[in-house]
Image (cartoon, rainbow, N blue to C red; front, side, top):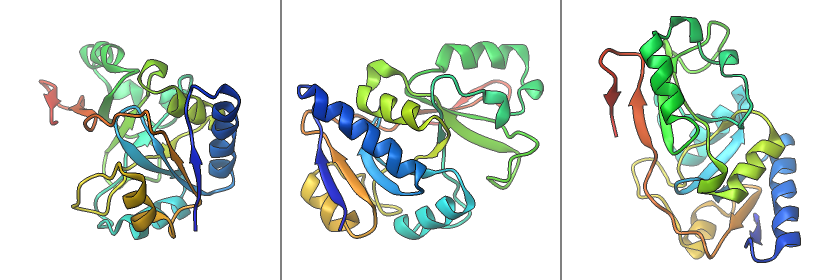
Length: 199
């Protein structure tokens, strides 16, 4: 059963300790539940094993890829083919990132995932959720980051529901009673002209 950490920024030492614990579990290849900049999500490292585990836990079809969330200073050109972006797309990217925007971008030439020529990425902002921002930046690498739900169902936000549905499937649950889930991130496709807002 997953260990549950009740996090609140009001208790600074416990908050900081939980951030380090979340990053440590992710570095060890674990899977965690935590609030994101938008809604609660499932998170694990970006690897073939991580992808396989997430598809199994979410019961999600293998042909539906997951987005990546990136820490603040992660070099985007490691996963995105920046050279193929038109100047106007680069300008739009700078407007939308960091923030609650998931961008569909041309996939880097050396990327093994996902299939196809595009990849979905988001760079969260500290102002949208400090815990998530700090955990991601302590981990300091790309994370697979789907919403907290079984495929085709509504995202979860109640702790009892989270434990019931995912308590046996993840390594830890970081729950913030003060967190107010919003809506999923906006989704922009910057690989087409004109740009398309898909969500």
